[in-house]
Image (cartoon, rainbow, N blue to C red):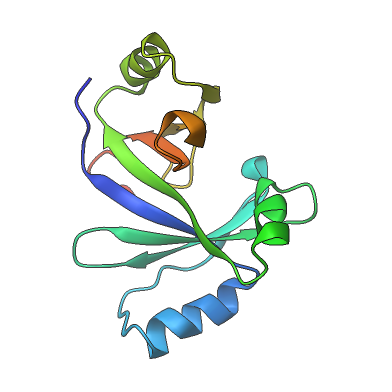
Length: 141
């Protein structure tokens, strides 16, 4: 397996609307994508473009959302995960499993419309890590 580029940093937030204002007014972000719901993962998502990556703002879509627990411990929000690209999601999953890392679930469609999976923070230096298949040219997000 070959690790690809850092695609995004996931930031949990209790309010995407307030976070968008922060990134626009304080951080000077110029390109902020339209927020959208991702019901299969229980979150609302918004991407903020940076020159070399993106910030993925993540707001829970209710108490069943996996982000709800994170925000209960971190009410103001904060860094939730890092996401790296790989050319082949299934080869990457097999690689991490062969190293003894705990892969959280099967590959599924993520916010960029490509397959993703997460690796448990205890096996990734304390960082929840998302692995995503490199988006095809012309992908919307």
